[in-house]
Image (cartoon, rainbow, N blue to C red; front, side, top):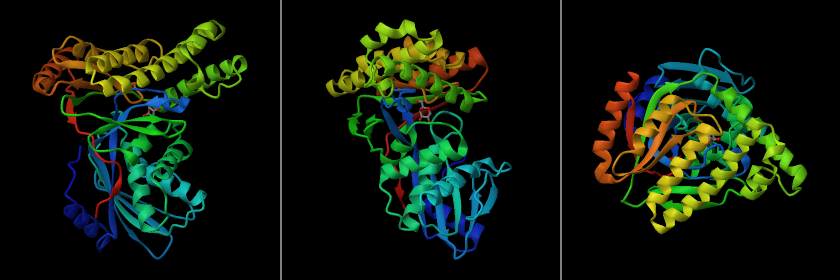
Length: 388
Ligand code: GLA
């Protein structure tokens, strides 16, 4: 993983790559989701926070229609014309910027050519939304560079469209939204239908510890899209029974119970996860408000169990890390975070217990799997902005 250069060093790296300094530098953070998994594309509720791992882009306008991209992490470059925005199979990292440019052009935004350097320290393939951070950082920079006047949620929606329409993963709005609108010191309860946000102060009684299994599974995109289709099947069925249902968000636990047996077994399991998970997010929001961290933790474990048994997106390494957390003193709760199929768990831990938790979990995981997990204590940061 690349260490993030200072803003000054990054400005110099841009100058070395392109011959003169950038017009501006923007940043956008990765995220960890505390609870509410696979609910966003069901119009439901999520509770992510932006983390102190981010992507930075430096950019300068050109007078022609060329776009030149340099990745500091990959020591690679890629270029294209605004008149032909296609995938670059040799430089897949560039497809996020290409997707953003394509969506901007499709939506009628007036952008010209530009040179851009990209650097980041969000772990990739770990479920911490490095791709959303690239999309939101790129959009934030171009928004300012070309005076597009996009509000933060418009930036988020365009980033989501780039991921869905260009990269090909039918993601929800969570990752791009929290990267755009996160708030330091807070998680955010987000209603993915109305985009209404409620800040959740984290306070000083809890630390957010993320442990990366170091496992990534191929075909995450297609398994993700399959889950989404199963949820849509379930919602279509409930809409025939309850005409006001537009998404699984609209199905209560009682309604689910009454009609679950009319669904194919797998579809019923997927729906049960989403319906119960939405309730858990709302309950977690209330528990945070009361300062009831043990209850938040209990809901996190229940979320993990549901993702393991009903949504079937965990892997043994994720289950093992969560099970290790269950028996630890000072740990309120833990669960997988992100899309699943590998990636990270997130745990809420008493600050004084962090050091021993980190040490023990890393050692036991290594003994069990032979893999070395990366463990980070994450701090909630502000969403995207121009920083230079
Ligand atoms: C990925 C997607 C999000 C969300 C999560 C699962 O991170 O990008 O939109 O669906 O998976 O909660």
